[in-house]
Length: 85
Image 1: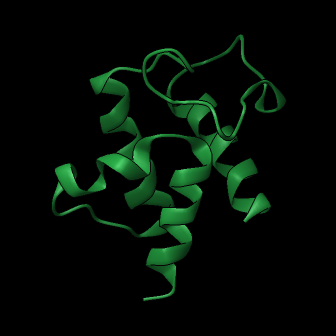
Image 2 (image 1 turned 135 degrees about the horizontal axis):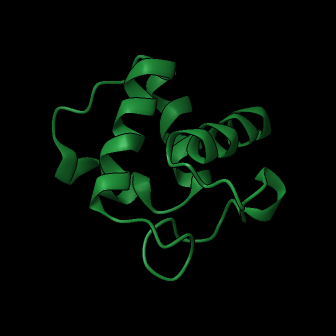
């Protein structure tokens, strides 16, 4: 799980051009949207691309996936749950 969290942090920084942020600066439990990293709906699309490209996860229903996009940790838990299928 910790390895996936670290990978996600690095992938988010690269995909979202967060050049001023280092992986260790991202709290895995902080919200990705709003008060946390301050991401927006365009960034959510980039996260969907990360899931598809790097983990082979296709989101059929984005509304159902919304809770998994809360933090880096919830995203990592979602990835692990999908890999078990």
